[in-house]
Length: 465
Image (tube, rainbow, N blue to C red; front, side, top):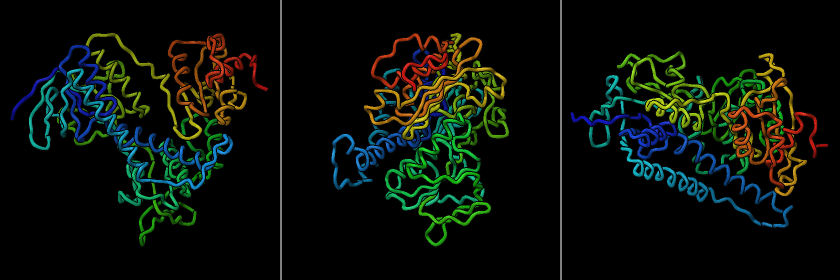
């Protein structure tokens, strides 16, 4: 069997994997990336973040055209849905971006292999492509195999009527009644898509709230807003089974009547892709949940020369977290003293309105006994929000009571995902709420809501009633 040599080889071509390979090449290493799919990009680009956001945008435009344009003096009659065209646009967006990775690999002289890779020893990966098999030897091996949707006992997925987030991205028709198991960001985003397109959406959540882990005040406000949009929430609902019976989906929850529906989305979280990659052959053991333990400074596993990052090692299962870990990992290998601040990873739910958060929640601060001050800026008092017609929402800034350093920012409202970047930078650089309040924000912009919230921390908000 032939052997190919590289300085660094990355197993997995998602956000963490392809970024690791590119950064390694930029640092002068002979880098390669292996992915089992025909296109690089991983779950996020191919069947996750990007296609779901494409559908969220298209479905929002469709819904807004039907219901929200008359206030702007635009009369649109007989608005119709062309679901096939919407799906085609989604695929075109994905195709453009996956092709872009090929161009980036070429530009940075990264060698890409489309095939299945497995560890053989601490310096070797065996690769099986459609037409060939060979070994790749490298001084440094990086595992970035990502994650997959979690299954649930009693839920009989058929990959069609009952399926996961990948299935829900490509329905051929709008389901009349659609059940979502799980009230996290995946369930809410895809539930929003099909709700806007005409489905009766029921979200089943085992906990007593949606968006567990996020700021509770925002979670409650989001639920009220989404309920007004037509999504039905059934909290404290423990799903015992979901199966197809006589061509229909039947969902049974503990202590409740069965729910008959057309399709079911299981959105109960994700699990790491740590199986069938050869961990046992090199002596790497996972934790009970299947995550690979690493030194979070260097991302090296228990085996010297083998590193892991992204969803495979746990923590926030977000593409941008994997990308940052990839950069730090490669720079550490190159001898650069890089680091990653896990206290300021933004998280975004791309519903309408969007929800974005970074840093500590009020609940976490109270549990830790940290005294804090809070400032709130309202979308309804913002001129730009009024002109957009998006006045529902707020920005909440939490600052340390003693130092005034910003320790948490939580936003629900239009373009929250863009606004949260300012907050992440503030936390990264140790800014105070006074720093934000003293920084001139352009008028009229949504960013002024952040400015108003910073002023409110000190009780001197200008535009709040």
